[in-house]
Amino acid sequence: DQHAFYNCKSLTSITIPDSVTSIGERAFENCVSLTSIVIPDGVTTIGEATFDCCSSLTSIVIPNGVTSIGEEAFYGCAKLENITLPKHLKRIELRAFKGSKIKTLVIPEEVNYIGDASFSLCENLESVKILSNNITFDGYSFFGACYKLSRYEGYYASEDNRCLVVDGVLK
Image (cartoon, rainbow, N blue to C red):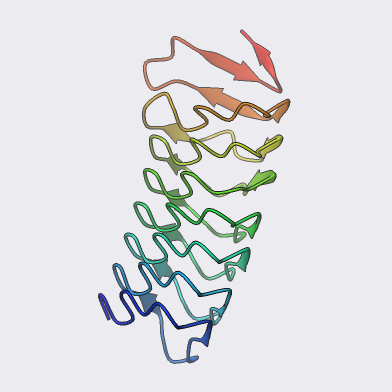
């Protein structure tokens, strides 16, 4: 449900039931004490701003059934260092992980869309590996202000094809 646990500041952990297939918009937004969440394999969609401002969340495993991560889903998760993106993920909407503390990132092969500013302000991001070569990058700043980014493997072409990067080489 949308806004299901919105602003539950004392919620520290939750296990979502197996019967859930979609986590609604803003379901856990501003649950500032949330440190642990178990998402069942049957979930296919993580909605808009679902975990926005869950500032105590440090890691999350997103199950393989998830194909879409909504706009600002993990925006403002200031302690989120470790994520595992699912094998069958197709879309990462704009600002999905903006401002998190992710250190390494592997974009799965089936991803075909990454929204603008999806990983911007991830100041600890050091390494990105993109396994897909069929991605639409919406905008320019999906890795903006990632000052520690020193290793980039994979393909990137700007929306207007003015910038092309293949395995860390600007072409």
